[in-house]
Image 1 (cartoon, rainbow, N blue to C red):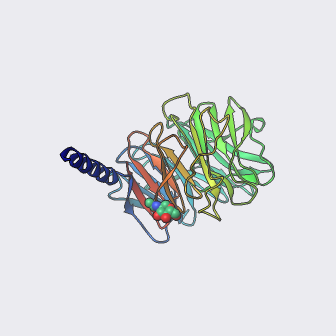
Image 2 (image 1 turned 135 degrees about the vertical axis):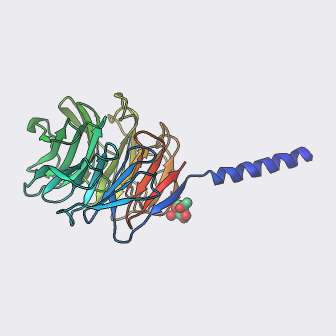
Image 3 (image 1 turned 90 degrees about the horizontal axis):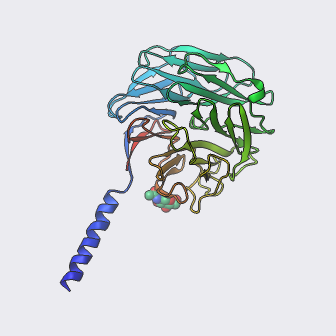
Length: 344
Ligand SMILES: *[C@@H]1O[C@H](CO)[C@@H](O)[C@H](O)[C@H]1NC(C)=O
């Protein structure tokens, strides 16, 4: 009897501490009218965000305080992606025309244009860096070819990828600029990008040659397809096998079909989760080898089995989620100027 009582008490206590330790979001910042889709977490203390109205923010104390900048001359631009290399150096990418990339080397006080594309129809979506130096930026197709520009000096200079190496998208197939994460550079000559619209596919490229792989995501509309890509081990390792794609239909953001897929073979084949995230998702990141977090306008989910099953932890919307490049902290940013930290 006594033993039973002790057992029950222990079980109750265990259950209670487990629920206390459940993943939680701590809101660090919110501002009506602001929207952040760019997020770069350098380490546990240093993070940068970017968004609409020419805004860039930087925190050096893990999100307790933010220093805000409005980039002079770009007050109306929407910076949909940011990559920070340290406390003073970062690059930002503006969507819409003209396509511009800017760089700061003084902590955000001043910005210099390092890339400008005035072609009509230009629309840059996202960029990605490998080892803080090799980078690529992707834009929607112009003249039937995906826009791709590359840097090998941490964004100081950019040049076009040779036309022969460019992915040729289908009619109505493009990229979404919802979280700055639909391209991942895996090494000097290797990258993956994911598309949406009439079709949703992954372009997996090595040494200038690529191939399209169908994604099992909802497609066929103008708001359907892949929005975010996460790879496990991109930052330090060369051998990337595990990948996760999220998306769906942002016009129906609680629909749970065709909104995610994972790969265990470097993007060659993709599987649909057994239990999908709880709606359209724009951002996803690996927290550990098996643990992932995904976010979108309708909420945030966690997977602890490499993307096979998902559990929702919040109905608050976020656009983008990132784990520190050097550290374990995970931050999210989104609409309403919300910035949060995930406790895990
Ligand atoms: C998960 O989603 C369901 C359905 O929308 C909702 O009822 C529930 O409150 C959500 N859970 C959390 C923790 O937000």
